[in-house]
Structures are given as C-alpha cells and as structure tokens.
Length: 209
Ligand code: ADP
Ligand code: ADP
Ligand code: ZN
Image: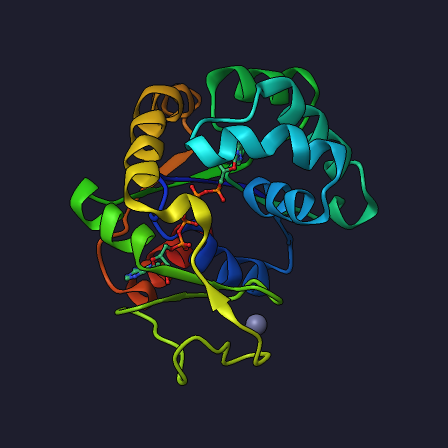
C-alpha cells in the first residue's frame, strides 16, 4: 500500500502516521523529519534546508525530489510506504509520477485555520525520540519530559505563531492545489481532522481497509 498524507501544518499528519504504519505495516517517510535530522546533524542538505524551514517557506523542489527518490529506492519501501509531507507542490506530484513513484491513495486531513494555529503553536516534540505532544491535547505526564524516553520535550523553532501563519499561507497557495490534482485522478479521500485524534484515526482506517 502506497499512501500520501495531505493536510496543512498542524492537521495531525504525524500523529495519524504512527497508527497507519503500524496497522498496515508500511514505512513512514516524513520529509520534515528527514530535513530536521539533517539540520541537527549539520549535513550539507541540512544547511541548505534550514534557511527555508526557519522562514516557513518550502525547501526547493529539486532538493526534496532527489531526497525522496533516493529514500523510496531502499529495500524497506518495497511493500509500501506512507508519505507524510510529500508531495507538497504540483511540481513534486508530477515529478513523482514521471519517476514512477506510485500512489494508491491520498488521505486529505482537513482542519479549520483557527484550530491549526492552536495545534501547531501548542505542539511539543521530544528532542531524542521525536514523539509529539501538545500542551493541552496531549500533555506529557511530567512537564517538559518525554513519557517514552525521558528526554527533554521542546518546541520546534518553526512552531512559533508568525511562522505557523506563514506556513499555513504557503500550504494554501502551494499545496492545496494538489487536492484538485488528486481529485482528477480519483484516488483522494477527505477526512475531517477537527475531531479527537482517535476518531480521526478510525475514519482513516475505514478509508484504507
Ligand atoms: P508540518 O507537518 O507541520 O506541516 P513538516 O514537518 O512536514 O511540517 O515540514 C517542516 C518544513 O520542512 C516545511 O515548512 C518545509 O520548509 C520543509 N519541507 C518538508 N517537506 C517538504 C516538501 N515536500 N517540500 C518542500 N519543503 C518541505
Ligand atoms: P502535522 O504533522 O500535520 O503538522 P501533528 O500530528 O504534529 O501535525 O499535530 C500537531 C499538534 O496537534 C500536535 O501537538 C498533536 O499532538 C496535536 N494533535 C494532532 N491531532 C490532534 C487532534 N485530532 N486533536 C487535538 N490535537 C491534535
Ligand atoms: Zn522521547
């Protein structure tokens, strides 16, 4: 099964991805996570991506496409994958098609703008294992400490309010056109992501089963 998760920043893509990959036994590929790892490690790719990410802009298509193409060639992708945060532009979607990177189903998680800002600005992530929390909706048991591994839980630098607003605008102008793109292909399912994470999960499973 080859699935794409579409949705604005804070929609719950990462949160939903965890349950999806577990249920269908496929690989989770988050381009945002890959970029953040490269930034942290100070790789050449990380150095190139950082400036764009800090501003809430998209990393140039060529960089992202090469990265994903490389990742999908690896052995663990043979039986399926979940792409989280890619494609994000029509150019990326067309490149995928040309390069033979298959998509069976697109899950479009829809959430209202007011809800998005609260979700992204309240998001906290574990520095070590990457587990995602929310100050109100999914707090850690001990403030600032990861339930899973005990490491420090921090705010992503691009989750500050002004950058979140910019990212939502970029989503609307660059990524939202993909909804139409996949609508024409007939393989997209729209899921209301305003509900509780568990309810959203059930709706996604029902669409994919
Ligand atoms: P969110 O899940 O909150 O939408 P991501 O973790 O997916 O955020 O992405 C963080 C940042 O990484 C983006 O703002 C962008 O700069 C960069 N990025 C991730 N995926 C892509 C992509 N497919 N194309 C361009 N830039 C990307
Ligand atoms: P994305 O990957 O789409 O940017 P995340 O999965 O990281 O979004 O979710 C953004 C924030 O909102 C996180 O702090 C997460 O814990 C929280 N969250 C995710 N889904 C829900 C939901 N259905 N209801 C409330 N909070 C949620
Ligand atoms: Zn952790």
